[in-house]
Length: 113
Length: 111
Picture 1 (cartoon, rainbow over the protein chains, first blue to last red):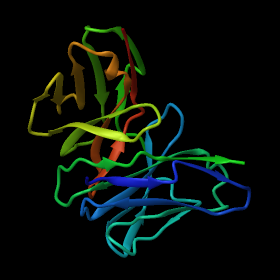
Picture 2: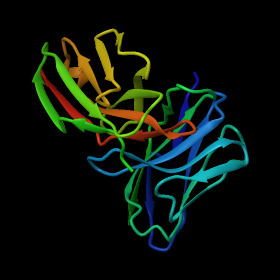
Picture 3: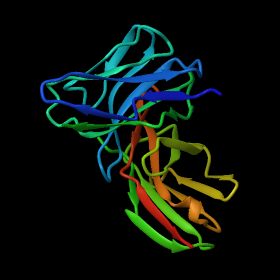
Picture 4: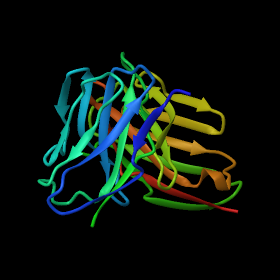
C-alpha cells in the first residue's frame, strides 16, 4: 500500500547528541515536509523540500537539518543546538500542482534522557 | 506563524449529536483543508474546499467556506465515539504547497 513511513516511533536523545528521524514515502510525491507538534498545539513547519536535492527552511528551522538525496526519503536531524527537542515530529508529502492534500506519517515522539 | 484559529478549543458531546467546529484565517487563500488526528497518530486529510466553493460534503462531514469573513466551519453529523479526535484546519496561505495549521479543536464524543 502507498504511504509514508516514519521511524522510529519513539526516540530518546542524550544531551549533546544529534539524532536522525527517518521519513520514507512510496507515493511518488515530489514535495515533502517536516513538522513539529507540541502538546495541545498545531503543527509548525521545520523544513520542506519541493524537489530532490533542494529544500527550504520553514518557520522553526534552527537546530534542525535535512537532506533530500532521493525522492522517496527526507530524513530530519535534530542537532545538539536544538535546546528543546522534546516534541512529536510529523513528516508529510504531497503531489505536484495546486490544491493537493498532504499525506502524513504516524510520527516520531522524541524525548530527552 | 499560525494562520488558522479553531473555535472552540475543546468540544464534548453525546453520541448522535452534531459537532460544529469553526476556523478563521487572516489572508487570502486558494483552498482550506480539514484534517483529523487521533491521539498519538499522524493527521488524516478529511476534505479540501477551494476558494470558489461555498460548501462541500463528504459522508457525515459538511464544510462551508465564507471568504468574505475569512472563516470556515466543519460539521460532523450524527457523531460517533470513533469521531473522538483533534480536528485541524489548514490553509495554503504559506504559498508553494505549504500549509499553515491552526491549533485545533479537541472533540470528545461520549457514548
